[in-house]
Length: 139
Image (tube, rainbow, N blue to C red; front, side, top):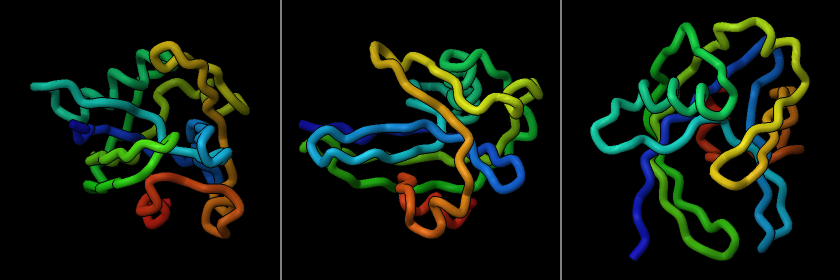
């Protein structure tokens, strides 16, 4: 039986660009992007999960954290159905060095991942895919 995952994700915007993680669906041979963050653990407030995930993955403390809303994401990844409830936050990096970087490699479990700055217009015009799709309205 599949589980519903609860995630805390942070949208970090700097001018006309947004900081996102790059993903790839091998079954559909599709590159996509998602705001950074991760799973909320039992008993953990989602804002704390957001801070913990950014620290674990990037050693990046956050500031100016503002709750945006709750999104539901029902999807198929690598041929398997998934269901997520996402607590979405707008936030900023506390350390200005992250605004100078073009991209950052990090580990998510055993997988090597890439986070990078992407021009918002590339998502809004449909050139690149941002999941969950409801994130577009918060860009």
